[in-house]
Amino acid sequence: MVIVSKWAIYTLYLVVFVDLFQLTFVFPFIPTIVTAFYDKSDPGAKKEIAASVALLSSLAAIGEMLGSPILGWLSDKIGRRPVLLISTVGSAGSAGPVADSRTLALGAASRLRDGPL
Image 1 (tube, rainbow, N blue to C red):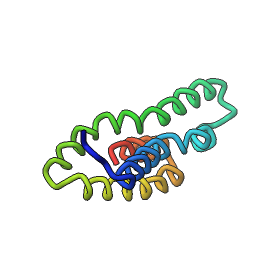
Image 2: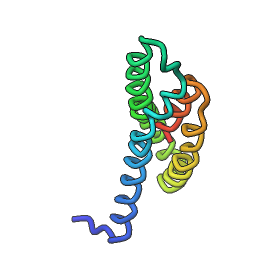
Image 3: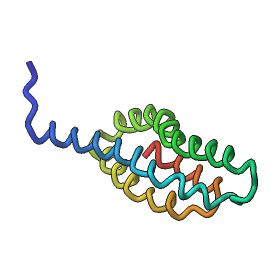
């Protein structure tokens, strides 16, 4: 049986928490961000807003699905610790562009980029 230190387990919990947090923290703000992209007087805007909210909500998970194998390969090459550090700092730093996006395309690109980190 392999003995693992408490600190290793706590670090793993922290990494998983940060990963899930970066994926879901923006959910309450997405409707407000997306509403600013559309003319609310347009009768078809509600459907477009709903579709855009769903798109922005799922793009980070899609990015994570696409980026995980790459990060796994990279951690095999240079080690887990550097990849986890870069990934955690990158996730923290990529929250700003989502909040500051002026167009739906920029918001979508920011969320998609946020996933692999």
